[in-house]
Amino acid sequence: MQKDFLLEWRQKYAFNGMLLYVSSTVFVCYLSFGLRSNALQVPVWNALFWIILLFTSVNAIAKSFMQENRGRLLYFYSIVSPQGIILAKILYNACLMLVLALICFVFYAFVLGNPVEDIPMFLLSILLGAIGFATSLTMISGIASKAANSSTLMAVLSFPVIVPMLLMLIKMSKNAMDGLERAASLDELLTLLAINMIVVTVSYILFPYLWRS
Image 1 (tube, one colour):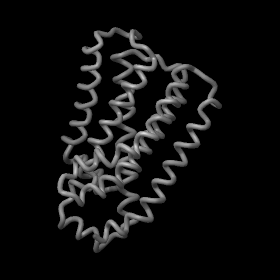
Image 2 (cartoon, one colour):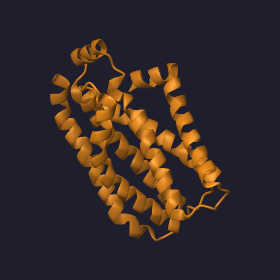
Image 3 (cartoon, one colour):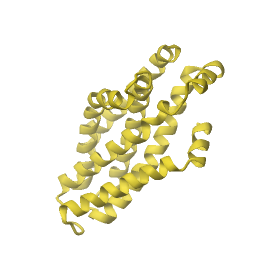
């Protein structure tokens, strides 16, 4: 994690590129709909937000293993356990996605208005979404990095994994936007927690086999 944070601090172009992607996408949505504050319907606002966040996460996490050259991976193989590698990557990507998601929400709400009635519950859905995207896409990035056309393979592999999680996040955040009782989102909350725990456990168990190749 220290290595990844240090590289990100020295090479700010990656993080700045993600910020530019988020801001430009939000601004294009604003121009496309010809909007002013609070003019967008709640379901459309919610769907657009998660679509932007999904593509941001794919672009941000894709570089987890793809940016590592063969010599550096061989060096890591000799000094670090594979479980340490995958857990460090997941934690780093979760922190990165949480920062990007919060920035995206602030800028998105500023440009397109903020119809969210239950802010803490919506922020909780953002937290679970950031962790869920990080856990799922990190392992997929490791698998895709072994192939020739890794970017395309990652997009293909991530789709069936992310869609169920995305449906839960959209429903949970929609409940927060409507101001429903928090008990109404309990099923989605437990499902997202279960998915995240399962993905982390599976990554912890299976990544050593991928690492040896």
